[in-house]
Image 1: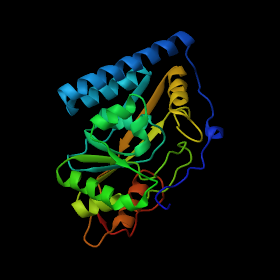
Image 2: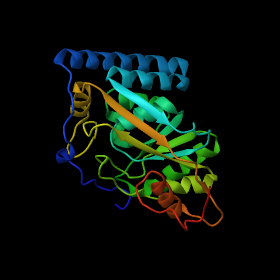
Image 3: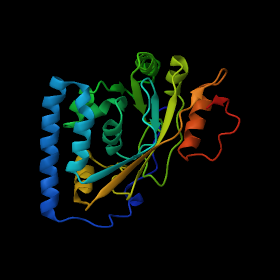
Length: 257
Protein backbone atom coordinates (compact mmCIF):
# COMPACT_ATOMS: atom_id res chain seq x y z
CA UNK A 1 0.00 0.00 0.00
CA UNK A 2 1.21 3.55 -0.57
CA UNK A 3 1.05 4.20 3.17
CA UNK A 4 2.81 0.90 4.03
CA UNK A 5 6.36 1.58 2.80
CA UNK A 6 9.19 -0.94 2.94
CA UNK A 7 12.66 0.05 4.11
CA UNK A 8 15.64 -1.04 2.03
CA UNK A 9 17.79 -1.17 5.16
CA UNK A 10 19.05 -4.42 6.62
CA UNK A 11 21.76 -5.91 8.80
CA UNK A 12 24.40 -4.83 6.28
CA UNK A 13 23.68 -1.20 7.26
CA UNK A 14 25.10 -1.75 10.74
CA UNK A 15 28.77 -0.96 11.06
CA UNK A 16 29.11 -2.53 14.49
CA UNK A 17 29.55 -0.93 17.91
CA UNK A 18 32.63 1.12 18.71
CA UNK A 19 32.87 -0.45 22.16
CA UNK A 20 31.00 -3.24 23.86
CA UNK A 21 30.66 -3.87 27.57
CA UNK A 22 31.25 -7.15 29.34
CA UNK A 23 28.72 -9.94 29.78
CA UNK A 24 28.07 -9.07 33.42
CA UNK A 25 27.08 -5.51 32.54
CA UNK A 26 24.78 -6.76 29.80
CA UNK A 27 23.03 -9.15 32.19
CA UNK A 28 22.58 -6.44 34.82
CA UNK A 29 21.10 -4.09 32.24
CA UNK A 30 18.61 -6.68 31.05
CA UNK A 31 17.56 -7.38 34.62
CA UNK A 32 17.21 -3.66 35.29
CA UNK A 33 15.10 -3.25 32.16
CA UNK A 34 12.74 -6.03 33.23
CA UNK A 35 12.42 -4.40 36.64
CA UNK A 36 11.68 -0.97 35.19
CA UNK A 37 9.04 -2.34 32.81
CA UNK A 38 7.37 -4.27 35.62
CA UNK A 39 7.31 -1.24 37.90
CA UNK A 40 6.04 0.91 35.03
CA UNK A 41 3.15 -1.45 34.34
CA UNK A 42 2.21 -1.26 38.01
CA UNK A 43 2.79 2.45 38.62
CA UNK A 44 1.40 4.10 35.50
CA UNK A 45 -2.18 2.83 36.06
CA UNK A 46 -2.02 4.13 39.65
CA UNK A 47 -0.32 7.51 39.18
CA UNK A 48 -1.38 8.25 35.62
CA UNK A 49 0.42 9.41 32.53
CA UNK A 50 2.50 11.99 34.40
CA UNK A 51 4.67 9.04 35.46
CA UNK A 52 5.55 8.15 31.86
CA UNK A 53 8.55 10.50 31.37
CA UNK A 54 10.15 9.08 34.51
CA UNK A 55 9.51 5.49 33.42
CA UNK A 56 10.82 6.22 29.91
CA UNK A 57 13.99 7.81 31.25
CA UNK A 58 14.47 4.81 33.55
CA UNK A 59 14.15 2.44 30.57
CA UNK A 60 16.87 4.35 28.73
CA UNK A 61 19.12 4.48 31.80
CA UNK A 62 18.71 0.75 32.44
CA UNK A 63 20.15 0.05 28.99
CA UNK A 64 22.98 2.56 29.31
CA UNK A 65 21.38 4.97 26.84
CA UNK A 66 22.12 8.67 27.30
CA UNK A 67 19.44 11.10 26.12
CA UNK A 68 20.04 14.56 24.68
CA UNK A 69 17.24 16.97 23.78
CA UNK A 70 17.80 20.17 21.87
CA UNK A 71 15.08 22.71 21.18
CA UNK A 72 12.01 24.15 22.83
CA UNK A 73 9.42 21.95 24.54
CA UNK A 74 6.42 21.63 22.21
CA UNK A 75 3.25 23.20 23.52
CA UNK A 76 0.13 21.05 24.08
CA UNK A 77 -1.86 20.25 20.97
CA UNK A 78 1.20 19.83 18.75
CA UNK A 79 1.84 17.14 16.15
CA UNK A 80 5.42 15.91 16.54
CA UNK A 81 6.81 14.22 13.44
CA UNK A 82 10.14 12.40 13.52
CA UNK A 83 12.35 10.17 11.43
CA UNK A 84 12.29 6.56 12.59
CA UNK A 85 15.36 4.46 13.42
CA UNK A 86 14.52 2.24 16.38
CA UNK A 87 11.95 1.24 18.97
CA UNK A 88 14.11 3.39 21.26
CA UNK A 89 12.74 6.43 19.39
CA UNK A 90 9.41 5.87 21.09
CA UNK A 91 10.97 5.69 24.54
CA UNK A 92 13.07 8.79 23.91
CA UNK A 93 10.05 10.85 22.81
CA UNK A 94 8.07 9.74 25.88
CA UNK A 95 11.03 10.80 28.04
CA UNK A 96 11.00 14.40 26.80
CA UNK A 97 7.37 15.20 25.99
CA UNK A 98 3.85 14.22 27.01
CA UNK A 99 2.57 12.73 23.79
CA UNK A 100 0.13 10.19 22.46
CA UNK A 101 2.03 7.91 20.09
CA UNK A 102 0.84 6.64 16.73
CA UNK A 103 2.17 3.09 16.44
CA UNK A 104 1.64 0.03 14.27
CA UNK A 105 -0.83 -2.40 15.81
CA UNK A 106 1.88 -5.09 16.13
CA UNK A 107 3.42 -3.07 18.98
CA UNK A 108 0.53 -4.18 21.20
CA UNK A 109 2.09 -7.64 21.36
CA UNK A 110 5.59 -6.54 22.35
CA UNK A 111 6.44 -7.69 25.90
CA UNK A 112 6.39 -4.81 28.39
CA UNK A 113 6.63 -2.08 25.77
CA UNK A 114 3.28 -3.04 24.26
CA UNK A 115 1.62 -2.82 27.64
CA UNK A 116 3.13 0.60 28.31
CA UNK A 117 2.05 1.77 24.85
CA UNK A 118 -1.55 0.85 25.66
CA UNK A 119 -1.33 2.65 28.99
CA UNK A 120 -0.04 5.81 27.29
CA UNK A 121 -3.13 6.06 25.13
CA UNK A 122 -1.29 5.09 21.96
CA UNK A 123 -3.22 5.36 18.70
CA UNK A 124 -2.68 2.15 16.77
CA UNK A 125 -2.55 1.91 12.97
CA UNK A 126 -3.52 -1.30 11.21
CA UNK A 127 -1.33 -1.08 8.12
CA UNK A 128 -2.93 -4.20 6.63
CA UNK A 129 -6.30 -2.39 6.40
CA UNK A 130 -5.93 0.82 4.38
CA UNK A 131 -9.63 1.63 4.74
CA UNK A 132 -9.10 2.31 8.47
CA UNK A 133 -6.57 5.09 7.81
CA UNK A 134 -9.09 7.97 7.58
CA UNK A 135 -10.53 6.95 10.96
CA UNK A 136 -7.03 6.94 12.46
CA UNK A 137 -6.33 10.40 11.03
CA UNK A 138 -9.60 11.63 12.52
CA UNK A 139 -8.61 10.16 15.90
CA UNK A 140 -5.28 12.02 15.77
CA UNK A 141 -7.06 15.25 14.79
CA UNK A 142 -9.47 14.90 17.69
CA UNK A 143 -6.59 14.40 20.12
CA UNK A 144 -4.88 17.55 18.81
CA UNK A 145 -8.08 19.58 19.11
CA UNK A 146 -8.44 18.35 22.68
CA UNK A 147 -5.03 19.83 23.50
CA UNK A 148 -3.08 16.58 23.52
CA UNK A 149 0.18 16.35 21.64
CA UNK A 150 0.64 13.42 19.27
CA UNK A 151 3.88 11.93 17.94
CA UNK A 152 4.04 10.09 14.63
CA UNK A 153 6.77 8.60 12.44
CA UNK A 154 5.61 9.53 8.93
CA UNK A 155 8.30 7.48 7.15
CA UNK A 156 6.01 4.57 8.00
CA UNK A 157 8.85 2.20 8.91
CA UNK A 158 12.37 2.23 10.31
CA UNK A 159 15.58 3.13 8.50
CA UNK A 160 19.20 2.77 9.61
CA UNK A 161 19.75 6.52 10.09
CA UNK A 162 22.19 6.92 7.24
CA UNK A 163 19.44 6.01 4.78
CA UNK A 164 16.05 7.60 5.32
CA UNK A 165 12.60 7.47 3.83
CA UNK A 166 10.29 10.25 2.79
CA UNK A 167 7.58 11.61 5.04
CA UNK A 168 4.20 10.23 3.97
CA UNK A 169 1.55 12.97 4.04
CA UNK A 170 -1.46 11.09 5.45
CA UNK A 171 -1.06 11.94 9.14
CA UNK A 172 -0.30 15.58 8.37
CA UNK A 173 -3.96 15.91 7.39
CA UNK A 174 -4.75 15.68 11.11
CA UNK A 175 -2.74 18.86 11.76
CA UNK A 176 -4.42 20.63 8.83
CA UNK A 177 -7.89 19.64 10.08
CA UNK A 178 -7.09 20.62 13.68
CA UNK A 179 -5.19 23.81 12.72
CA UNK A 180 -2.40 22.44 14.90
CA UNK A 181 1.31 23.29 14.80
CA UNK A 182 3.72 20.66 13.56
CA UNK A 183 7.13 20.26 15.22
CA UNK A 184 9.63 18.20 13.19
CA UNK A 185 12.08 16.25 15.37
CA UNK A 186 15.34 14.74 14.16
CA UNK A 187 16.36 11.54 15.98
CA UNK A 188 19.96 10.38 15.72
CA UNK A 189 22.22 7.82 17.40
CA UNK A 190 25.99 7.71 17.83
CA UNK A 191 26.14 4.27 16.19
CA UNK A 192 24.04 2.14 13.87
CA UNK A 193 23.54 -0.62 16.46
CA UNK A 194 20.15 0.64 17.75
CA UNK A 195 18.65 0.54 14.23
CA UNK A 196 15.63 -1.81 14.20
CA UNK A 197 15.73 -2.93 10.58
CA UNK A 198 15.50 -5.88 8.23
CA UNK A 199 14.57 -9.16 9.91
CA UNK A 200 15.48 -7.83 13.35
CA UNK A 201 13.51 -9.03 16.37
CA UNK A 202 12.75 -6.97 19.45
CA UNK A 203 14.81 -9.29 21.67
CA UNK A 204 17.84 -9.19 19.35
CA UNK A 205 17.65 -5.41 19.22
CA UNK A 206 17.36 -5.02 22.99
CA UNK A 207 20.31 -7.37 23.51
CA UNK A 208 22.43 -5.50 20.97
CA UNK A 209 21.78 -2.17 22.71
CA UNK A 210 22.44 -3.66 26.14
CA UNK A 211 25.81 -4.98 24.98
CA UNK A 212 27.11 -1.56 23.96
CA UNK A 213 29.28 0.25 26.45
CA UNK A 214 27.15 3.36 25.99
CA UNK A 215 24.62 4.67 23.49
CA UNK A 216 23.60 8.28 22.96
CA UNK A 217 20.32 9.28 21.34
CA UNK A 218 19.91 12.91 20.35
CA UNK A 219 16.57 14.56 19.61
CA UNK A 220 16.59 17.95 17.91
CA UNK A 221 13.31 19.85 17.66
CA UNK A 222 12.97 22.26 14.75
CA UNK A 223 10.82 25.39 14.77
CA UNK A 224 7.08 24.77 14.67
CA UNK A 225 5.36 24.79 11.29
CA UNK A 226 1.84 26.14 11.11
CA UNK A 227 -0.37 25.41 8.12
CA UNK A 228 -1.12 28.62 6.23
CA UNK A 229 -4.36 29.25 4.36
CA UNK A 230 -4.37 27.10 1.25
CA UNK A 231 -1.61 24.74 2.36
CA UNK A 232 -2.21 21.01 2.38
CA UNK A 233 -0.83 17.85 3.93
CA UNK A 234 1.66 17.26 1.11
CA UNK A 235 3.29 20.68 1.40
CA UNK A 236 3.35 20.32 5.17
CA UNK A 237 5.04 16.92 4.89
CA UNK A 238 7.68 18.32 2.52
CA UNK A 239 8.40 21.24 4.84
CA UNK A 240 8.74 18.90 7.82
CA UNK A 241 11.16 16.71 5.85
CA UNK A 242 13.26 19.74 5.05
CA UNK A 243 13.31 20.80 8.69
CA UNK A 244 14.92 17.54 9.78
CA UNK A 245 17.30 17.42 6.82
CA UNK A 246 15.56 14.78 4.73
CA UNK A 247 15.21 17.01 1.66
CA UNK A 248 17.17 20.17 0.78
CA UNK A 249 14.59 22.88 0.16
CA UNK A 250 11.48 24.30 1.85
CA UNK A 251 10.88 27.14 -0.59
CA UNK A 252 7.44 27.71 -2.05
CA UNK A 253 5.52 25.36 0.20
CA UNK A 254 2.88 27.82 1.35
CA UNK A 255 3.57 27.53 5.07
CA UNK A 256 3.57 30.16 7.76
CA UNK A 257 6.42 30.08 10.25
